[in-house]
Length: 137
Image 1 (tube, rainbow, N blue to C red):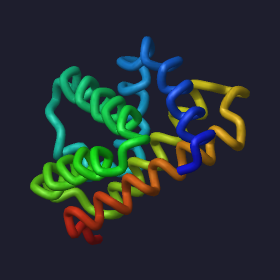
Image 2 (image 1 turned 90 degrees about the vertical axis):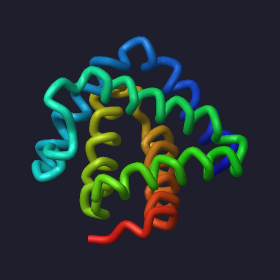
Image 3 (image 1 turned 180 degrees about the horizontal axis):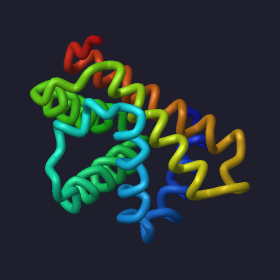
């Protein structure tokens, strides 16, 4: 990622951090609408999952300038998700829900540059997850 993309992602993440619980709840609602079969992988009470999601995103964003740390975080996450049987199509639905949620969160401030930066980050994460976990389907 280019330095200006890292800066855009970091600033936007900092802005949304105070709304993380609400953003996570909306994200999962959208994700389950796009991948209803994935809901069986999650607990009925999602509060801890909301925190896990946002903490993982925070760790990834914090590691954007350290490729080895980034790959370590994503690799660990990939192995956990592989144990649960997450599929490539569910990863795609995750990305769609993430970008859509960010667009809703930021409204007009979700410029094409910001969308491009988050999309590139997600694609990088997805690629690393598939590679680390051997995810198919």
